Length: 278
Image (tube, rainbow, N blue to C red):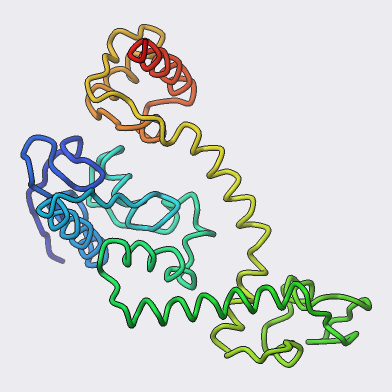
């Protein structure tokens, strides 16, 4: 066995961009933030490096959301929850795992990479072509009749579409590949099948994200006085004052802060904003 020891800093000193709150233009990453593992270090290094470069150029910071990337989940966990042991990024930590699939990583993150200048013209054109093929395949699957009563050992009613066939767990792309009007490459066809099979679950998860977004993006003033809200529990006041979350959504993910605390905080934050606008 062996032991590894290293120093780390308290994570309430970090913004979601990995910018240090107390030292201007200092972005922190890897083990000093309390993480362990190569992937965790690489993801933080990428975000911190991008933001350091953008800050030097006078551009806005890159902050990935929890429904956008596992890196966003990890950084939000670190900043809002802190650590009491080395942090590893487990898929179980993400509440939107159906959206954060490896097969759709390019759809989620290539546009982000293009916007911040990390995707060159050739890669962007290849991505756009791949995305267009996927969209055409999905459109064809929804509008094209299967044309047969049996496929992949399954029976279908007359008029069933390719999409209806692919929704069945037993049916894979190879079973109905020859039913598409325009032949699809296997890679695109398999992604069409995955998108269709996950469609219902993805829709429900997006609705949950939209509902949560009503409070997620509500900003809390940086110098907000939590101690003045006596309706909050003492534990909530102490932890909110220490962590200084930037939004109501981040406040709700702090251990010890309950949904009722967030509801009370929301009332006072909106009241404070209304008073400031008068």
